[in-house]
Amino acid sequence: MKQMGRGTGNWKRISWDEALTEISQKILEIKKKDDNLLGMALTKYSGNFGITHYGVEGMMSSLGYTTRFVGTPCWPAGIDAQNFDMGNMWCNDPEDFVKSKYIIIWGGNPAWNSVHTMKFIYEAQDKGAKVVVIDPILTQTAAKADVYVRIKTSQDGVLALGMAKHIVDKKLYDKEFVTKYAKGFDDYLNYLNKSVTVEWAAKESGVPADVIRQLAEEFAKADPATIWAGYGLQRHTNGGNNVRAIDALVAMTGNIGKEGGGARYGHLQTWGFNYNAMVQKQPKGSKGYLGKDIIKSEFANDEAQAAAYANRTININKLAESILTTNEPPIRLLWVACKNPFAQDFDRPKLLKAFETLEMVVVVDQFFNETVQNADIVLPSTTLFEENTVNVSYWHYWIGLNEKAIPNQYEAKSDLQIAALLSKKINELDKGSCTFPQITDTQVWMEKEFNDGIHKFFGIKSWKDLKDGPRKAKIASSASWSDKKFGTPSGKYEFSSDQAEKFGHTKLPEFKERRKAYDKFRVLTPHTQFGLHSQFVNVDYMEDFNKEPYVYINPKAAKAKGIKEGDMVKVENKVGNVTVKARLTENVAVDVILMYEAWFKKGDFNVQNVVDDESSDMGTFKTGAPGVAIHDQFADIAKA
Ligand SMILES: Nc1nc2c(c(=O)[nH]1)N[C@H]1C(S)=C(S)[C@@H](COP(=O)(O)OP(=O)(O)OC[C@H]3O[C@@H](n4cnc5c(=O)[nH]c(N)nc54)[C@H](O)[C@@H]3O)O[C@H]1N2
Ligand SMILES: Nc1nc2c(c(=O)[nH]1)N[C@H]1C(S)=C(S)[C@@H](COP(=O)(O)OP(=O)(O)OC[C@H]3O[C@@H](n4cnc5c(=O)[nH]c(N)nc54)[C@H](O)[C@@H]3O)O[C@H]1N2
Ligand SMILES: [Mo]
Image 1 (cartoon, helix red, strand yellow):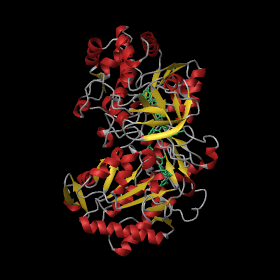
Image 2: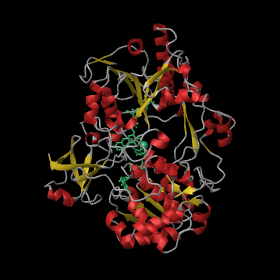
Image 3: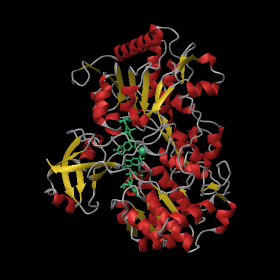
Image 4: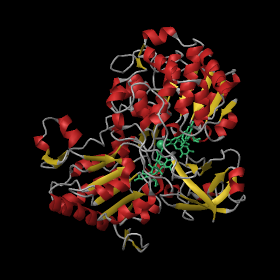
């Protein structure tokens, strides 16, 4: 479909051939005008993490060097934190929660967001393990726990420091681990003794001192004890630092490298694919980007340099700002796939302005969402039922096939099929413009991702074995770091990290002030029970469970504002506003308001009207861009 004037809603049905001709002509026009293709940009994230979807990146490479939005809106601060501490992000097998005696779920809501893990938590509980949830919201997970600890948002580092101080005071730390397998514990100990008291931690975090002492003692004495650091925890301007302080608790109590223990965050151990779809060669003579200088790809000293510098990379979390400020050349054509920026990216009012400056917007999606409303051309994408791909996880250790269950519906095509068609069309118009191969069978693409390493790791002879069902990786131990050889420069667990300092952080996970409030209430916009981000909320049968959005307000705060249950409320801040129905609940603190992120196809509810694009502290080290402080937002409320 083609929109006659972006945002007008005046759509015209066109053929695939017409659509691809128009897009190809635009690409060729840009190349002619700029003498390179950096004016073409891709933003793509988690619409479908099936491995073949990296064919979208492959399509971009097959056209030339382009602009890529890099990093992730999801978990980068925590990734850097774990890399500074341990030299990788690597968690225990979640199934080994059953071996834990003490489980702290810290800033995560798995009862909604990781339902498949809860049975292992329950099994541990049945065997006598204590489960503690630390969250500013009394979540469904907290309701299932033995203890719920309400914390002031962003103050997790302080709480962890207070617990560490008490563990030191009581000499409950693991002397063998901190001397043999760790670097910098003495410095950390000195810091705790000099700068931290339990009373101070209590005041800053809102968790009473006796609770801090009890948590610390119970955690240190249980064996094994584990902490699951959720992703919500690190979406703050001090989030990475807070994850480091939490890692330190697990390390100093000797729980790293232990089955049933561990500082759990995520892992990428099972991702050893060929990335065949992703790794495509630029057409000969393509011009790339090296800092400010445009260079010819052939002139790059080696492949690595070419790969590192030839695409222009921009922080994915600053989409609006970057479109507005990127020059030489500006971003002219934006390709959006597996991503819904108007629902999921930050500062929606600024994004609207930014889109006005684009010459062409192409969105590949399944639904007529707000991003599509702001496009010129929408290409209908298949769903996961219409393609073959393979899935692994950033949490568990299984691999599974996604088998095509039904043929492509109507005229929809997969991202890979679109890439092949675009390649064909642009080469018709200008031979040699694209290297993407003419393979449209998604099974062929999927097969190409397997290799001996994958086969061996999962104990299969061929991908076909997965037709019988998913397989679990053959891991020697359910614990990560079981040999206590860490991936850091010292090979040890680093309480004190020179690398962290190199990236502008303190060596130790010292107290880091949270973002200053810029409005009256803190706004939290975590993940919904009834969908995956902007996906599935809009499906008819899901609407039955989740008819409309709400803002959750503490009854005391509501009373002060004259707001009653069911009133329409305007939530407003410097970014914008959203009007939504109120629900009063003590599940949130008096100074916090809560809305779940989601895309409802009826109405104009959108939490990104009150979420700015402030960066989190970490992410640049391992993902190329800092994360985003999604939960460091503030707003006021009034009866609408
Ligand atoms: N306020 C707030 N914002 C957030 C978050 C938050 O907690 N609060 N969470 C952040 C996090 S953790 C994440 S991971 C991001 C997720 O944000 P996104 O990456 O945007 O994820 P989704 O909304 O799941 O999916 C995006 C789009 O992909 C489309 N899609 C699905 N399958 C395919 C396909 O095969 N091909 C193509 N081309 N498209 C497809 C879907 O229809 C959907 O429109 O949001 C971030 N934004
Ligand atoms: N049903 C469903 N499942 C999903 C998703 C979905 O959208 N829906 N999304 C998937 C994706 S991409 C991701 S990244 C994961 C995310 O999974 P989670 O890590 O569970 O993410 P969130 O729901 O964003 O945040 C979890 C909790 O962090 C809390 N939190 C926020 N700020 C702070 C803080 O400063 N301190 C503490 N202690 N807690 C804080 C929030 O109150 C919330 O309860 O879930 C995945 N699973
Ligand atoms: Mo995410």
